[in-house]
Image 1 (spheres, rainbow, N blue to C red):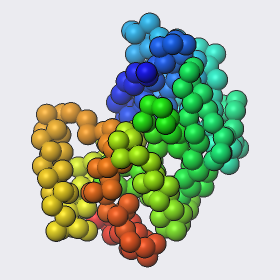
Image 2 (cartoon, rainbow, N blue to C red; image 1 turned 60 degrees about the horizontal axis):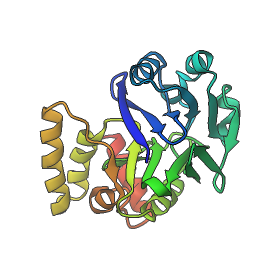
Image 3 (cartoon, rainbow, N blue to C red; image 1 turned 180 degrees about the vertical axis):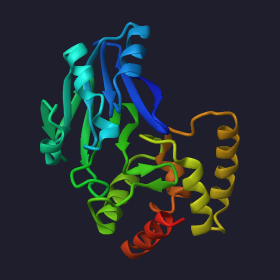
Length: 240
């Protein structure tokens, strides 16, 4: 039902522009900047009505104010980070929902990268917007949380259906995969995936969205068997 457009910005960020045709509503996920978003929406004849933020970092909220000023849109984001995102209109947490026209999203608490990080899962669309929690073959750094929280996040996200498309906010796949090969050198699925990733990057093409099925098979953080193993892998990746 929905249409999702990738907008690459800064060095490796992706902003997601999401259009729901029945209502003609258009939403922006984690706008780092405003100008490319406004230009893409105008090019398509879409009126931006909402912004959804997954966490407070400036490369996810930096465009909020300018887009809101230009469009009058409504901004939804994590209740636990309300003091760090002054542009928010609606604050949500796990158990709440957000709605884009006819499409409902479930809010999932996924703290660790930041203390109040959330994800938005649209069951009817088989889509989840996960910010900087889950990446293709990676996870977010533990800036404001713990390995135990990230381990719990991986359990929540791996419980989504195999076919769920995961829209993360950065093009980190090649570097994540290079570390993943060190963490799991005997993982044949991982080797095959990295061959595909290298081909895509040589063409200058994006490697996301990914899927839950792919991450279950190749993501060393989702595949970590314990909190301790995830913590060790995260430290190793930080120093890789």
